Amino acid sequence: MDKPQIILHVQKSVNYTLFDAKWIPCSAKFIALGNYARGTGALQIFEVSHGDVKMVKEAEKSKSFKCGTFGASSLQNRQFATGDFTGKLQIWDLETLDLPIYSAQGHKEIINCIDGVGGLGIGEGAPELVTGSRDGVVKVWDPRQKNDPVATMEPGEGETKRDCWTVAFGDAYSAQDRCVAAGYDNGDIKLFDLRSMSLRWETNVKNGVCCLEFDRKDIKMNKLAATTLESKFHVFDMRTQHPTKGFASLAEKAHKSTVWLARHLPQNRDVFMTLGGNGSLHLWKYSYPSARSKKDSDGVESGVAGSVDLLQNVTLSTQPVSSFDWSPDKLGLSVCTAFDQTIRVIITTKLNTL
Image 1 (cartoon, rainbow, N blue to C red):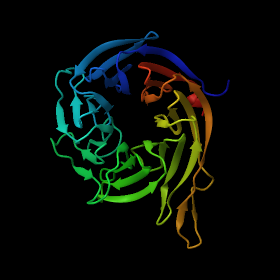
Image 2 (cartoon, rainbow, N blue to C red):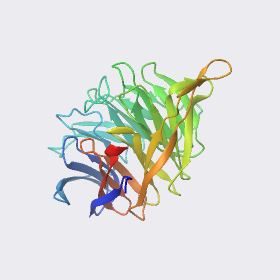
Image 3 (cartoon, rainbow, N blue to C red):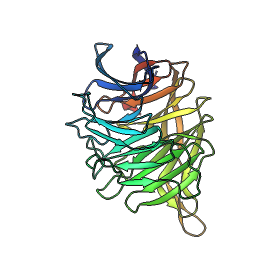
Image 4 (cartoon, rainbow, N blue to C red):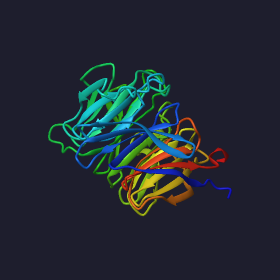
């Protein structure tokens, strides 16, 4: 019983397909996003209290929602950015859900993924959003600037466009530094440096990349988790980049199905949860090697990957898990959604002992 336990605290069934859920910062509430069978968008706010989950607000919009983030919002305003099935990027004030306070036709096709930085006191510099779409384009937005992105990363002339499945901010440790990692359906992972506006690194992990996440956005790049189809995930050590070999990494088999997501614990960056297409949750701890870099025969530094240990695993659903979000405020509290149209609030114990 010394190990962490993953406990289902409460669950709630809904009448739409769930794609994303996020905790509202500094509250016991979370937002769930999805789409109704009639093709409209569902946005609902729930509150966790006394062992139950109650819906406190809802809005139905004309277009289905795919993803959302608070990452570019201030803690005072707590404005929620969403990406929808028609490629629209919108920002909502949760007090008045009638109309978005910001709206831009971000992409030609569905926005698969969104991330934010510079808000919530996380990451130096301006608040920014990044979106990735089926149209193969990754765009960076400043919510204070209407309509036009501040950066666009798209395939060059004659290159085939790949479906972008995941985007993540990182390296935002100073007001100038910032990067975006993007993962694609063909296994490509690309790291864009927003300071020099250049492609800093790319690799291919041979399977579609479902999720990328840095263990922390607001420090010098430390680790990047990448989950893929064919039941595999990778962890890259991002501290040392070799000129030809790139970053050192480890690969691990998990879930016996697609690994949909990896989510690092906000209170401990070396602990993370992976979520599977078979409805399972796996809790991992990363251990660093004794030396994180070594010199090769030419005297050039290259990184050394660590190892991961499976702390606990549990199967909660028969359907794939579509989203998972750790509470930033309460250690071990999380919300997760699956394609069985159920929202689950989960408590993971003993995380403070790891």
